[in-house]
Every structure is written in structure tokens, then in C-alpha cells.
Image 1 (cartoon, rainbow, N blue to C red):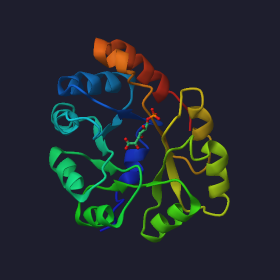
Image 2: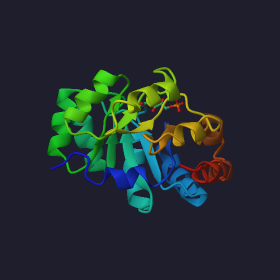
Image 3: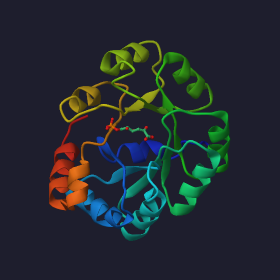
Image 4: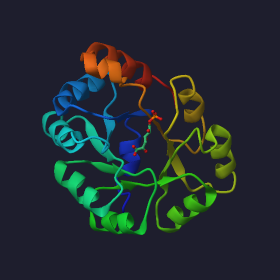
Length: 211
Ligand SMILES: O=C(O)C(=O)C[C@H](O)[C@H](O)COP(=O)(O)O
């Protein structure tokens, strides 16, 4: 089976995929509801915190209208764990043969990361037409994506890393970008304060971006 079956539809759900770092699993459900209220129906929950796995499971269970993805998946065992927790897609900042093998065995589609033309071509050769361009700003940003897109037409990107509400529209205007990832929708202070209304407002602004 193709390891990216259905991924195109998931990446088309919102112009911005919020990249979430959740310290407190109890925040997961109200946070997902706030994002849905703002019109953002897809998230990437990074495995950067102890609470991440529980957060994925809680969101997938309690907020079925949210497409919950798992990010920072670096190993085959993490791939299996997030699938069990209910993740609908898996994101990695890079890629490795072991994680590719885990993706090949899984029903959950995989969005691997690349930052150079050689990495992009390796992934394309392995069948990955959708790739995370990471770390987007540090790896050359918009000029780099344009330069990669000139010779390599077949790959569509979700750039992530250092993107802001100001730069997001310019990324989204590129022919080889389907969506962008970013952490700005969920500022740490807003999460700590449980400012769900504020997060819903940021989500609404992101959901309204054109692509
Ligand atoms: O954790 C991962 O797997 C990552 O790939 C890193 C995140 O995508 C970036 O850290 C996004 O964060 P901002 O740059 O703040 O928008």
C-alpha cells in the first residue's frame, strides 16, 4: 500500500497545521475544541513532551472531527505507538530507512521531512510526493522552495519551522506548497492560562488564509 494514501486530503483540511507542544494532557481536548471553533480541523501533536501520547489519544477519542496527526516521530516504535493512540497521520522532521519500514507496515500515512534537493529526491524515489520542508526558514525559506520547485515539479511541501502569520501567506502562494505548519496558534502563555477563546481567534485568522 502507498504510505501516503489519503494524505493529500488531510493536508488540504487547513492552510495552517498547528504544531502543538502539550505539557498537560488535560489541555488536549479543550485545545482541540478551540481550534475546531476557529475553523482549523487538523493538528500535529509533537512527541516532545511526556503528555503527547495521552494528548493524541484524548483528542482522537473526544474530538472526532479533529484530524489528529503525530509529529516528531523519530523511531519505528514511536510510529506504532502513535498509530495505537489514534493518530491519523505521522510527521517526522526528517526520515530514515527504519521509519520508512514502519510506515510501510502501517495504515497511517507518513509525511517525512526534507531540507535539500538530494533529500527531496531520495524521498520522491521512495514514493513520497508530499514532504515536510523542515526547518523551513533556516533551510532557505521561500527562495529555496522556489529553487527546488523549478527542477522538481512532482513534490508538494508542507513547510514548517520559523513560519509566522506574516510570512505564511507568501509560503501558501507557492505552487509547490499545500499548507504550512506553525506553532504560533498555540502560544505557551495562552496554553498555561487556558485562553481557549484567544486560541480560537488565532485559529480563525489562520483558517482564513488563502492558498
Ligand atoms: O517537532 C518536530 O517534529 C518538528 O519538526 C519541529 C516543529 O515542526 C517546529 O518546531 C515548528 O515550530 P515553529 O518553528 O515554532 O513554528
